[in-house]
Structures are given as structure tokens and as C-alpha cells.
Length: 331
Length: 298
Picture 1 (tube, rainbow over the protein chains, first blue to last red):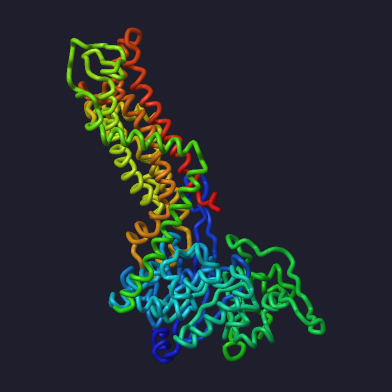
Picture 2 (picture 1 turned 30 degrees about the horizontal axis):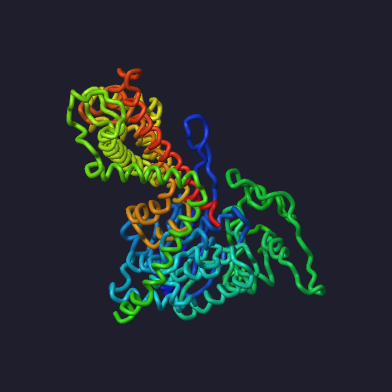
């Protein structure tokens, strides 16, 4: 109840994720029974406002991509609520979800796997338009040319196949496909990680200009802190299926509070000698998400851990306007 | 509308060019494999014979001429005559129609059901997968020819029943290959992309999965055709398939068996026909596999 009223009051709120959990069963034994669960995402809460770019960063396996896939309902989450424009996505049936998909799009990491090799560019984009029935048939071709222009591809690429393009160009096709249906939220799942640095910058700038042009909201999933720093308004740091810190970009990069965030940021290479920072090197490996540590999930690698960290799970607390940290030592 | 008109005029040559280049590169890769080319020519040769049998056959394959029975190959009867005086060459030509016809029919039958079962099992997974694949395992547990024998024995011996029997024993091979390919294609990001656009399962299966698993299906189909033709002939040889007076190669072989020493050409030529056609399909199938394998491109 309270959630719905809150959404009604705050017009800008686009996405509200509450206690999202995604546990994948681990099968084993002679009869293939479920013997355990991989707790890929274990209780994640965050909000997104219209028009902003929110990044999720973290190491491989921390659950950032899983969070994105759960919002798109490509996998059905174990538990939680996802309110998109006030509607709980997890309560929708297939037909209702299909309608919502028009506003919810995704750009994938691998430009070589994200386009059907047997479809021409025209057929890829036409399909997007016809699945969601966005435009009358007569206007669709015109729209396809328009989309190609928006993403900076020549008009004569329309009859070509994906293998005739470079990685950056393919990623542009993927962006055009996502844009085709006029979405509100685009989830960029490591959208530039597979590209060369120079091409990365081009694609990032393209995304930024498209955001201004079409008032898009981006959920940007990445592991590259340089990219995150370039594109985000706010940043979420995840560790082992939980959020450890949320802050706007400036606060996060200048005064990180959680020990894990500090360690992560200290790994960014420095270009100037005089800026040399203290490098925090974490000991050990990320524990298995099948059996995460009790209490704070980071306690066995945390240089500052106290007894409370081993038993109590630190809640995500607001320390100052919008800066949230999940640590017993930060008040 | 304007753009559409312009588009079709200007773009279609480019489109055709792209398609032509695709075929060209496929042909070039196939051509490199000389054995595959030989296989292809053999297959094409037999198909041509089967299609034009009624035009090129020198005699009526069913015409009994007891005065001229068991004749040696001569100018009049190139491959001799059988124990009822029928022209062996004409019977072989019409037999090509039967062998290839039954071969293709049972292959399509098996492939059709195999592909459907395989895709459904691979795409939906979970208990559906378990049920389908255990059923396939049961089919696979029988030796192929024994399974076909049992089915024909149950249905009665005729060419149509042989087609059905061989079709059923072809299902498991296709189901397994298609399931495996579906599993690997299903995980690719473009499937997720169309799912997040809201495409339904039918669209995803027919437009996005099936076209991308066609190569292994085609290769398997070609290789399987050899087995299917061999099995059909074997069943006919055992008297379970084509019934007299049909000029099926296996049946001709069986018929000529009684005259193995007095008229060996009655068994040699049908045997050769079966052997070369099967060899042709095998060589061609191997070549296709190499040519269609994306890892060998470039």
C-alpha cells in the first residue's frame, strides 16, 4: 500500500526494486534433486528516477547482471517486488508483461551474440517494430531509416547481415533495436565492455546524446569504473548479491564510505605520479554465493571487521541525502 | 511510401549480391573437398536417372518375356534380363525412383517429428525435456534394423509400412542433434533480446532458433539418407518391403540370389547401385559438414 501511494506522489520515480532475490537451484545427487541454491541476488532494494543514469558495479558474480535480467523478467526472480511506473512487474501475466516490454529494453554485452546472424538489419529492426506493433506498416521502413540515422549507421546497411559489421557498428544496431520501440528504461548490460577503448567512448557518447534526445533512463551494468564515472548520475556498488553502497557519482568517487567501495576505487590506475593513492589490496577470494558468510558478507575480507560484522547483517542505511551504506562501522 | 519504392529499386541489387556471395563462398568451400564433389555428382546423377526413368528406360520394367529370360548383357539388354525376362537396366532405373522416393519420404517423416521433439525438449527443458528424451532413449536402445523389423512385422509388409518404420527409426537421431543445437542457440543473447521485445515462443522457435540450427540438420539429413536407403533395401531384401513385381533394388537383389552363379549380373548391378548411391550420400554429407561448419570459415 505504502509503496503505491509513494509512487503516486513522486512522479519522477520510474523503477522501484524491493527486496529482490534470485536464487538458482543447484541440482545434484543420483536423482537430480535440488541440493542447494546459488544466492546470486539476495535482497536488493533501490529506486530509479526518470531520466537518470544509474550504474551497478561490482566484480564478476556479484549479481549485477542477474539483477538486470530479473527486472526484464528474462529469469523469474525468487522473491521481491519490482515496481515499474507503479506496476509490480512480477505480478503481471504474460500478456500484460508483453505490453510493458515496450517501455523496458536491453542492450547486451556481446555484439557478436546479440544479433541473429540470419537476419538482415532491416529484418531485425522491422521485427522489433512489428512485435510491439509500434507504427502502421506503411511507416515502418521510414522509421528504420530514421533509427539508423540516430545511431550513426549509413542507410545502405539496411540489407546487410550482422557479420558484415564491426563490433562497434553491431552495438549500434543493438542500440537501434532497443530504441525502435520508444522505451523509457534501457538496461545496458555491460554494453561497452566488449569494445575497444576508442569505440567505447564513441558508443558512450552516442548513448548520452540519445538520452538527452529521447529522455531515456539507463540502468548501466558495468565493471569498468572509468566507464561508470563517465556516464552515471548515481552508482550502486554490489558485493556477493547485496548492495553495499549507493551514492551519487561525485560522492562515491570522492568519499566512499564502505570498505569494499574504498578497495574497489583504489584499484583504478592513476595517470599522474603526484596523485599516487594508497592501494588497498583485499586478501582472499570472493566466497561462494552458495554458502555466503554469515553477518556482513564482506567481513572475512574486510580489514576493519569487528565482532558484530560476523553475526549481524548490516542494513542499508541512509547517511546523508541519498548516500546509503551497508556497514556497521559507518554511522 | 516514397522511400519504399526508391528502396526496392536501389537496394535489391545489393541484396542479391549479398546472397550470391554467400552461395559462392559455400560452393568454394565445398569445391575444395574433391571427394564431396564426387559424392554430390553421384547423388545428382542418380536423382536425374530417377526423374527421367520413364523417358530413358529402354524397356517396360514390368513386361514379362519368358522367351528371353536370364539373358547375358547384350546390345538389346545392356544389363541382361532376369528370370522372367524383364530388362534389368529398366528395372534399375525405375528402382532408383523407389529407393530415392522411399528414402526421402521416410527421412522427411523422421526429420519432421525428430526436429519438433528436439526443439520442444531443448527449448522448454525441465520435465518436458526429461519425458521426450527418455522416450528417445528407448527408441535408441533398439538396434535400428531390429526396430524397423518389429514395426514392419506389426504393421504388415508393404513399401508404405517400410517408409513409416524407417521414418520412426530416424526420429531419435534428429531429436538428439536438434535438442543439443537448440540448447546452445537458446542461450545466445539475441534470443534474450527478442524475448525482451515480447516475442512469443512460436516466433522465437521458428524465426530465431530453427534457421540457426539448420546446418547440422542438413548434414545429418544427407548422411542419414544413406542409412535410410540401405535399411529400406535390407528390409525389401528380407521380403518385408517392396512386394513383387516392384523393381526395388533390395528386392531385385533378393530375387537374383537364386541365380548367383548362373547369372551373377542379376545381383551385381543392383548391389552396385545401392553401394554407389550410399557412398555418394556419405561423401557428400561429409563434405557438407565441413563446408557448413562456421569454425572452418575464412
